[in-house]
Figure (cartoon, rainbow, N blue to C red):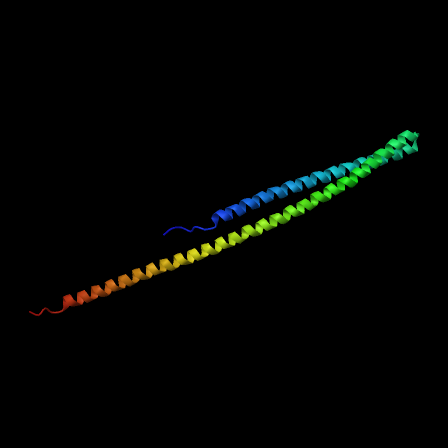
Length: 162
């Protein structure tokens, strides 16, 4: 008797590969999101340093031109932070999208895993039935042999008339 062969094995393998690819895509999205958050943190640090520097400069002597430069740079950082927040939010949305795709891929793969388990269970039950049938046939055959053997013994024990 041959072993179990799942008819959709190539499709299951494809689903597994798609799931693995989606895991990689999710990993890339998470990494990009983390990098963008790190960039945003860096901009906040620059803004805080600039604010501290402006506060220190105001305590001392500062020219109007220096104050304008500080103000321009401060506005630049503020705009950069706003834009970077959007980039971070977009990266977070991409992570959510990739995560949802992974959930879908995993559900698809699990459908085929369950189908394979079900088919394998059916196969094993069928094999057990066939084995039991063979065992029953062997037992019946031996029973018939014993009965035939006893009847031949009885015939040989009958007195010969002659």
